[in-house]
Image (tube, rainbow, N blue to C red; front, side, top):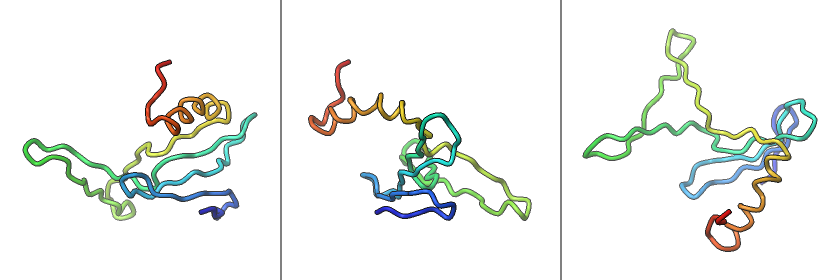
Length: 102
């Protein structure tokens, strides 16, 4: 569903196969070619514990009271040419369910 950010940039929100909220957003980066952000909206940090499997990791969010801040790269910042280069592999996957051999 297309929306606009508070700064006036288009953003399309969707859920991935795991039900995570994701988005495709026009970037404000000043560049020779257009840029977009693509990825999950939240960090969703997990850790693997032997004999227990994957568990969510709770992050302390209270930075203004001396808490710990966290940053994670959960979104890709892609240029127009990078998207163009990815399109053949994505199109092949959309049609066959497989990644191309080359």
